[in-house]
Image (cartoon, rainbow, N blue to C red; front, side, top):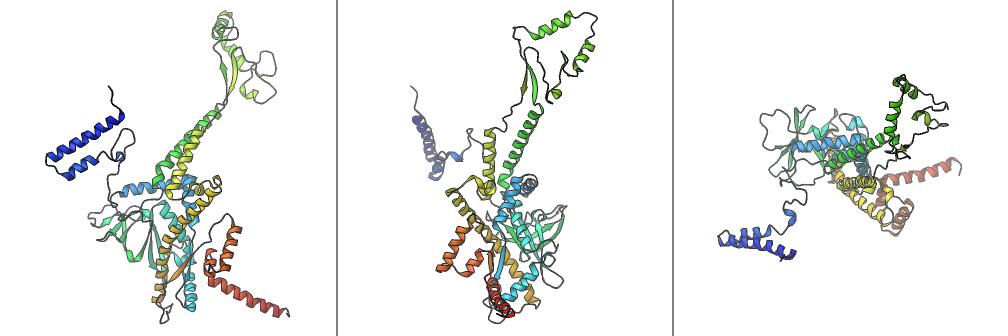
Length: 501
């Protein structure tokens, strides 16, 4: 009599319990016995022929990503950005959502704040004064930081100085930081281009050239390391598109095969189909063979073939038209018994293929951290779904802006420190927090500016929002706007006086 599934499961559990009992009896110990019993409790912890195998050999964050793997993921992400619109959008889209930050000095001294902001503007607005390569200003640098983290995983800004001892920066991308080739003796604390201190922190960086040769080392005091710290103890971070590499490679292959199939189907748009039998239930192949056999010996088959193939198709009885002549209109071919014209009716891409491609897009988007509708197809949702998506996107943007703010603040302090040291910025006595600043993001993106604007005006009127916060939400400086308003009020009086009012 057969056993039930429940009984069989109980039997397997019984074997494990019996084995555990034998371990205890053999003196192995209660701890190992409990561990042995627990092996069957979590099915996902064991390999099985019912599903794919999972490999994750290194649990240490420092060793789980080898330098070669990190570089290959970076190369794939760069290839995707250059060749796939979705990947390019996955880099530029979030970068535009995050936007750039503008500083407002908050030392507590209004005159000092104004002077600091003037100095900052002179050092960061003009690319040659900001960048050693004279390629980017401060806003361009922020965009480079955001794109580099998404595409490559990390980047490095080296803090240096210009001829007048003013601040400047030099930018290095992920492939320019590494151990270097042909190193006879590698420092024990050097890991993938990063010097680690005894706590696992980054004590410095090694720069390499395009050939992999070592250029120089940079201490952490002179560098800003840009990365999203997703794992503690990992020296270098992996591209945000690392999870998507397999997906977008598969997506390209599926699209490539589908397009090739459509092209082939379009190339063979029409053909003649010969039935196995004619209306008279006779074999046309046998008729043709009999016709040839009955021809007199004086008939030249080559001349007969040439005559048929070279027919002009001008309407003479028995003329043969080619397919090219038929599609010109006005004439048509009379087919032999059992023949008919077939045309291609291609159904590709199949709905299942489209569903698969849509799933790949969604997986890529969620791996980056934003909704697929925001990344690829905003018009596919509405109502409650849209409001939730916008709220979650705003949270994503706030987290990324906080990370960008840390890098900007570090640069802000360096610029001001260099100016103080050069004697171009005097700090009055009693001002301790000369470095303090408020970072104002760009105005929030909205799909209903009228409703959102009305809400903000109501909050401002009822006192639940300060004017500083209001102007900041519009991406503007409160003091700058108030100065403009005051200037406008004065100019109105002056203009009225000029007009004799």
